Image (cartoon, rainbow, N blue to C red):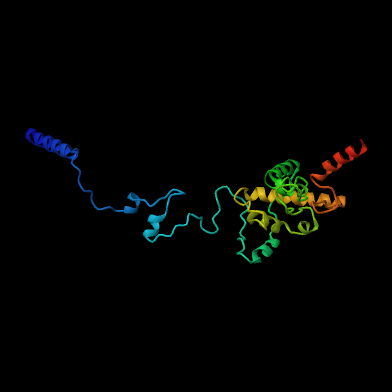
Length: 226
């Protein structure tokens, strides 16, 4: 019995010593090689190697993908150049957000002024700092958002324009969440209703007062009386 214990101890010692050897040995057969050699790529990593292997990776999300935390997804895609089918179809989309309270409307105004006011003006009349009655860096007046044309636009069509851009206006889908864009639509519609109730639409090209001309006119009148 004692002899068997000694032999067992010697064998275990030899086994442990061989196992801890620094000699590199080949591994056995791999059961799941894709786990050991992952093809995971960083967002902006070059994709040439994948293309060489026949893997076409564009770094774009799959169509219909909704990012985490995103609410009220907009399922209508952008029209192709020269097409307006989806732009027209967006007229049927209803604003999923309920009417805004005073606090939410104030936040919508803040978002509008940051992203839209520089072109469309704080009064939504198309006379923002970039146009400034034709004296700004933009020679063409932006759209008057409280004018008859935009007032007649349904909420979904305004949302489409904000999301994908329209004319010279770029898209704001990447900058603003869907909730923020729908709040801006609520804000624009509220201002349109105010303008309609007051009986004037203003505008950079209209006869009413606008975002920048009122102060200039007052200043001119003061000088004329001196």
